[in-house]
Length: 438
Ligand SMILES: Cc1ncc(COP(=O)(O)O)c(C=O)c1O
Image (cartoon, rainbow, N blue to C red; front, side):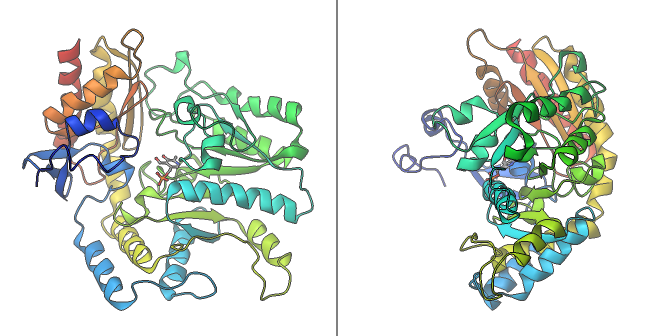
């Protein structure tokens, strides 16, 4: 179905150049496996697994069947003061798949909601313990934690913040994109020392005022920045030393993308709070989650007043929605039954070798990768740092490949089911697009 310019007008699209899009619409019509089909009938390889969501591939019949069954059986159930079995089943499954010490799961509808929930949990935890001064958050430059007020405040992407003014009280440590690490494969060698900046911020603000540090263990939106060796361990040590909660935003890394279920497992550092979203339902139905340890949960329970009282005054109408839970349980079964983590591990070196081949291009200034994720930084067009990635993205699309562009980077995150040939095809499309622009 094609839409006229007039029909395209009413929808104010998210994170989209609306004017450019509506003059040049890019409309998907269907999807199966690793491919979309657009409204012109062209097959397009899904080089970002949707938005880092659809690692198990599109059109998974197991998920469709679970969702349809659930819709017919229990389409909605009130999440406040009432429950249904699937959200408990899913919480147990999430606990099983996340590192030990993370034992309680709060459901949200998106990554952004998971972040704001995590931030409220952190502040509420300290207040409940009689330490109300601990309200400040520390984020990291270039960090992306969604678009709600808390997430924007702790986030470190200027473009996402500057229109909206002050949100939460937050300071930031430096990002880990270092000159000496350019073209690193996997975890960069240099950069653990950057974690020590947290000590500086503790000196400045005092730990008695700091609730939590939030980082993406691997920064996705900034253009795939794997953590330098030893960096996350150092953050963990400093947080422990000063009684600052450590939040890992695993909205992208959560469930499989790194080759382990979580980045915490892959990098062997366990946070106090973990947020999850994108891959949990394979992108089919919105769902997010916040996972915490027993200490946080039991603090709320013990200080919650009489047992009929609500211990944490927070939740969403759709928290733990039965259809989303059905989709998530089916997705997590697929990840395990199809051994998709093994596939990510097997294909990661293929992506790494292929993507680092792009170094030959004069327009490429840096390349980074880990698991099935890669980021390619491009030389800026004079005065227009965002333009070249946009042009590369459109050129890839002409060749039948969907990639994401953001800031001065191209991001690749093929589905876990992608094979060698498809990964080479994807990287070749980027190479040819760069050649055409050079
Ligand atoms: C690390 C991270 N956190 C949070 C979010 C926000 O998730 P959502 O778009 O589902 O609100 C994203 C989305 O890209 C993300 O990458």
